[in-house]
Length: 78
Image 1 (cartoon, rainbow, N blue to C red):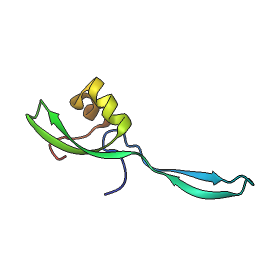
Image 2: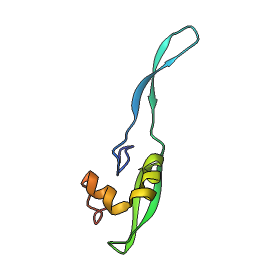
Image 3: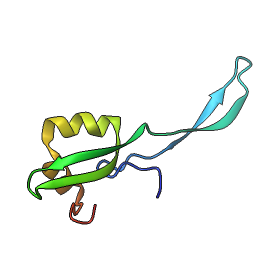
């Protein structure tokens, strides 16, 4: 499974690590992903998702069903 948030689609970013002498080397900025069990009231069950921490905060505000509908995700398969 790729390192990608299942609700927002966030993934790693290519960047440069710049030293004091301004020598640039490639680095990868990974997303802060957490595996979380979330209660899905419409399905009346727990759903295990890999989420970014930003998505967890948004999930508490919007709700799981609304975020899944916006991203076009079928929670029955998650």
